Each structure stands twice: as C-alpha cells, then as structure tokens.
Length: 99
Length: 174
Image (cartoon, rainbow over all chains, first blue to last red; front, side, top):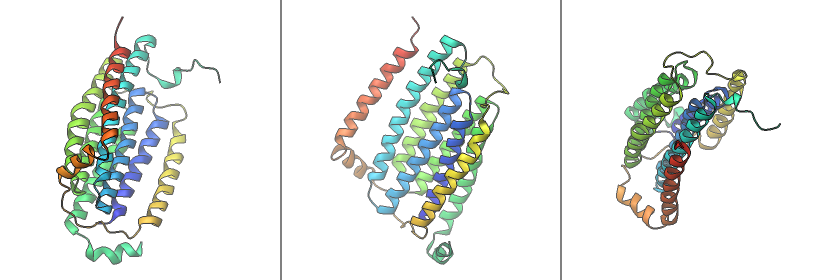
C-alpha cells in the first residue's frame, strides 16, 4: 500500500473541513467541520506510524482524540450559552467588537 | 506518478481496493456534511465519515486507535452534537440560511489548499510504500503512554477534567 493514499485522503478531508469552516454560518456546523479537520490530522499521524514502524504516531492520534472530545464539550457549552443569550447561533450576527 | 505504477506489483491489491471504496464513501459523506441543508443530516453524514476513519485505522494496522475512535467519536461526540443541535434549534428540517454570505470564497481556498497539499505530498512521499506490518500490540502503546509520554498523559487528564468542569460552568442556568 502506498503512503500517498492515506496522505491524499487526509488532505482532501482537511480541505473539505476548511471549506466548511469558511462557508458555514451555524456554529454547530462549524464545530462539525473542525472535527473533519482533526480527523484528517490523526489519519496522517497513524499513516506515519505505519510508515516508520514506531508506535508514537498512534499515541499522538489518541491525544488528538482526547483533545477533540474536550474541545467539543467546551465548544457546545459555549454555543448553548450564546443561544441562551441571543436566541441565535448564526456566527455573522455575533459582531459586538469594534473593527 | 510513474513510480506509483511501477510499484504496483508490490502492493497488496485487496487492501488497496478496500481503501479505495472506503475513501470514496468518506469523501462523498464529507462533502455532504459541508453542503447539506439539514443540520441533523449533517451530523448523521459525519457519523459515516468517522466510521470510515475508523476503518482506515484498521487498514493502517492501528486497532486500538480504531476502537477508541468508535467509542469516543461515534459514541460520545456524536451524541453531544445531536444534543447541541436539538438544544439550540426548535426547527428540525431544511434550513435556507445555513451558509454565510461569502460562502463561495471557501471553494477556491479549499481547492488551493488541497492542490498545495497534494503537490507537497506527491513530491515528498510519491513512491513510498507502506510496509506490510501486523497490528501494533496495545502493550507497546501503553508502554509509550506510561513511560516517555507520561507527563502529557497526566496533562491531558487534567485538560479533560478542566473541560468537563468548564462545560458545566458555562452551560449552567442561574
């Protein structure tokens, strides 16, 4: 199996996730696109672990999974708080800062 | 890319066919995640992508990571997402304004990013063949976690605790 298979698949998922972060207006959809990006990165890490034969890449993939779980928990709590205060989670309406 | 064709006789065909089918399903599902008009459908398409990632981990001989992916992402994170969707929106169904006004800007950005990444990847790893290794034993993973990666392991347990407490504090009603 060629290494580029995994790496190109991860690159495609990463690009799709970046498109989602830019294009989506709903905060929950943006969090889902961030999950796509994080998964692409850990797929890369596992592919490199297979390439080098060291298990460190898998260790880092597990760290990425744990960080993603924490990020989703805090992110959705923030979305809930914004929804409670403003009755909307559209990201382009959250413009209270100058600039 | 000629190296790809030259290297093809060393390649495990069944593994490649399985990879191709799963990768096509994953790309399709990922495109549905970022283009569908229905938030709940987007969450369900995300389940397909995450299951495909778990299958790719098994193809890449990382069984423990695959099982963790199923447990954590499909089991826990997706439930959180569905709760988040249902707590923030009364309306279940099609929505017309899920995209930003400048959403079309994302297409050239994503295409350029993918082109750049693909060029770099093909330039650097264009003819590397992944060796046929058996699955990495989980014992070696735990040896790494409890020896040289012990401090990050403790740090991440603290991060998870802080995230749980922070989520409760943020989402609490008072």
